[in-house]
Length: 302
Ligand SMILES: *[C@@H]1O[C@H](CO)[C@@H](O)[C@H](O)[C@H]1NC(C)=O
Image (cartoon, rainbow, N blue to C red; front, side, top):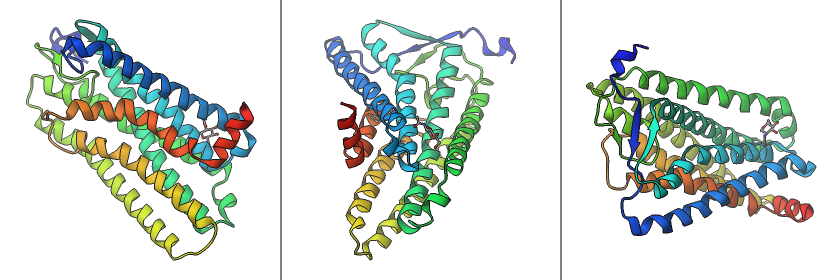
């Protein structure tokens, strides 16, 4: 990397969520509570899945993985959000910014692959119940999870390797509460059209296609289920419904942010808050804590 090319920018100024000082303290308290609940809720699920033998099935292993990732995902950005409410001017070093983008996309990428694996897991469980244990063995499940980490890494390293080649000049004020690709690319002092196109196709198109595949898969699943009249149908339906809810909550904002030109729109920051801070706290509630087996495990833990 030619240091000279990057001119003098060694840090970025994060403009944060809001400038209104009356709101700062209130928002700080609210988001501190949300982040606290994210950490507690998700780590509780990780602990339950690890400790409770009844939950040692692929579905719960995958949910445990998702909770762990949600905890990490929120922890990459929430500290910046919270600090932004307390500090007058928050800066982030160039390296810190690149690291944040790396981890943000690494974990986000894994989550998206994981959701696909979870859909496949439900498909096998519902339509091939007798062969389920053989198809989704420990080894297969572990292999799929490993593959999703590799997928996330490749996705992220592509973004980062492009970002680090961009030259930055002042002003270097980043209009968000954390570093992400669209805002950082906008600060580069070269024509970034080709870069944007590449980034949009990496993040945007990938999430859009993944979302469509999952939407079609769950529709097929639900349609097939509706022709059944068994006892397990209600349970399967409720599981699929909560999966679809989480899939929509995760993919919706991602598509909004990445599958379009990197211009800023009024709703951008609200959507950023939604998918960095709010979705991770909702996942454990929607997916797991409503679930009978998990409720039982919580009671046993007490
Ligand atoms: C994640 O999934 C793997 C493979 O099934 C499993 O061995 C591991 O315990 C899971 N991790 C968590 C935190 O649930």
